[in-house]
Length: 139
Length: 211
Image (cartoon, rainbow over all chains, first blue to last red; front, side):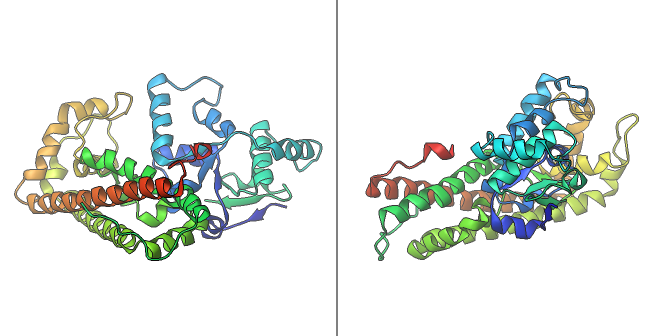
């Protein structure tokens, strides 16, 4: 089972991995969680960034908005970090178990979170409920 | 310009290396973003959070697990700690002024009788108030309110000098000037410290693996 952490406890621990839903909600100013996370601790995955600049049907969002989203990430100090060497092993372990998150993007995020021990800040906590060794921060 | 005196305590090379990576670089990066906004007099005030998006207290510029490193630096360089505290105080003052001006606007009869967009939503008005606080003349073209703001934003912005609202905006500008002064002073001291301590320790100011 994933361990649920509260944001304050997670911030004391390490960098935080930001899920796509948080990027979208923050960009659209629908939530204000980032303001509580110190700038150097704001990290995301290229998988989340891919989802951030694509629509649900796989089309890219328009150019002007894409540029704005990229600038926004830079100004917010959100770093996109490539998969860690340990992610491969974590991904392989998840792949063959029934507790693997349903989508490949969530599986990659979970693998990244487990291998680095960075809590994932997400609204979709249910997607990661059964992932052992993972820290999840709901918002 | 404030000068930083040499610390009385001896610093090790390893200590300086860690300060550069975990305190000075993150501080400078966050202060650069603040300068970009402050030079445009755009405070990045947000109506929903009633706070700034890009202006932060210095504690939020350093990772929480590294905060003890910043505190150690403040002990070695008390003037850095003093400037950081002044920055944070001026930021709090600016935040109060933004909130107060926003509140005045949202209760202003003049503001409330101004036209809204066709098919507009009631909550659009809080965004107009936000744009007035941030003195925003243009919105990016893909914003749903961009055309409306292009046509009417000027009228809204003139409310800043309307007699019943002007005192709030005068105060806001004053607090903005004061914050800018503190921000520039802190940036200078951090930059100077970064250059000097790196040179003295024989280190590069920025670790490329962190960029």
